[in-house]
Amino acid sequence: MSISLSPWIWISALLSLAVFSFLYKDNPFYRFAEHLFIGVANGYAVTFYYHNILVPTLFDPLFRQGKLLYIIPFIIGILYFTRFIPKISWLVRIPIGITIGYYVGASIPATTQAFIIKQIQGTVLTSTNFQAWNAGSWGIVWSVIVFIGVLCSLSYFYFSKEHKGVLGVTSRIGIVFIMIGFGAAFGYTVMARISLLIGRLQFLLGDWLGII
Amino acid sequence: MKRTFPLFLVFIFGILGIIPFIIPHPIVQNLDESIRNDILKILVAFALVLGLGSLLKVHMDKIKRKRENWQYSWILIISFLVSSIIGLFGGVAGAGPLPTSIGSFHFDIQTLYENIFMPLGATMFALLAFYMASASYRAFRARSFEATLLLITAFIIMIGIIPLGDKISPHLPSFAQWIMTVPNVAGQRGILLGVALGIIATSLKIILGIERSWLGGGE
Image 1 (tube, rainbow over the protein chains, first blue to last red):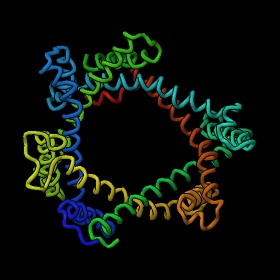
Image 2 (tube, chains in turn blue, cyan):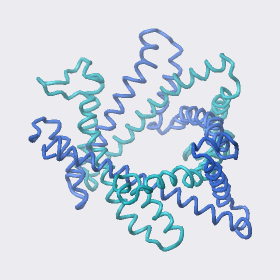
Image 3 (cartoon, helix red, strand yellow):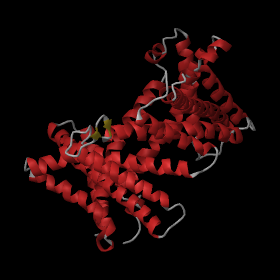
Image 4 (cartoon, rainbow over the protein chains, first blue to last red):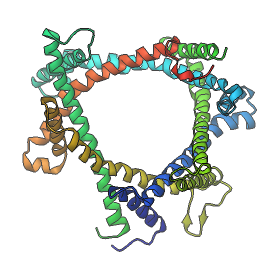
C-alpha cells in the first residue's frame, strides 16, 4: 500500500492529528478542529431536520398539498422565536410547554412499563427466570444472587431510615453490587474508547499513510 | 396568563401523553400518532433553529466584543453557514439545485459528514481514552474496599473482553461475562429502578405544575 492521494482522506487525517495534538497541550490546531466540528455538526443537523422533518412533515402538506390545519404547528413553532423579542418572550413557553408536557406524560407509562414492570419481572424468582440463564441448576443460584443484589441495592438508596442494623447490612451488600456495576460500566466505556482509538490509528496508518 | 397558560398546556398535553397507553381506541391512537408525528416533530425542528440562533448569537457577541479566542468563532460560523448552504441547497446526497462536485471531487453534505464530522467525533472520543486513564489513576486509587472492588471489576472486564484475557486464563472471558450478566445486572437494576421512580415523580411534578423551573425567569 502507498500514501493516499484522496483529498478527503488528507483532510480527515490532518483534522484527526489536530485533535490528537491536544494530548500535548491546548493549541490553535485543536481549537480550529473543535470549532469546525461544532460548525459542521450543526450544519448537518439543519440539513437533516430541514429535509427529513420540516419538508415532509410541514412544508409539503401545508404549501403543496394545501392542508391548512398544519398552519397550527407552524405558528406554534414560530413562537419559539419570540425568545428574541423581550416584550412577548413569554410566548416561548407555549411550544416548550406542549413539548415538555407531552413527552413527560408519555414517559410515565413508558418508564413504568420498561424500567419497573419489566425489571421486576426479570428479578423475581420464577422458573422462567431460572431457565433464562441456560445454566442448568446454576440458573437458580444466579437468579437468587440477582434478586438479593437488586433488593440490597435498592436498600442502599433508602434514606428515610438510618443505615443501621438489618438496613445497615443490606445497604453494605448493596454497595458491593453497585460498585461492581460501576466497575463494569467503567471498564466497558474505557474499552469502547480504546476501540475508537484503534480505529483512528488504523485510519492514519492504513488509509492515509498506507503503512499497515 | 404568562405563567398559568403554559402550565395549563403542560397539564393538558401531559394527560394526552398518558392516555394512549391506557385507552387503545383507534381515535385516541390516531390523535396520539398525529401529535407525536406531526406537531411534536415540527416543534422539535423549530427548537433546533432556536438553539442554533442562540449559538450564533453567542459567537457573534464573542467576535463583537473581541473576547479571548474570538477568531475561532469565525471558523464555527463560516463552517456552519457553508455546510448549511451545501446541505439545504445541495440536497442530502447532492441532489439539490446547488452543484456539489467539481469534476470527481464531491463536497455534498454526506461527504462532509463522513470526512469531517465522523473522523473529528471519533478522534475526540478516542482522546478520552487517555484522559479517562489518567483521571482514573488519580481518582480510583484503592483507598477503600469499594474503590478496590470497582477497580478490580473494571480490570477484569477490560482484560476479559480482549484476546489477551484468554491467553492469561481460558476462564477469564467467561468470568468477565458472568460479572456482566449477574452482579452487574443486579447493581444496575437497583439503580435503574431508583432512576425510574425518580423519572415518574419528576414527570408528575411537572404535569401538576409543582416543578416550574422550565418556565425560566421573568414574569
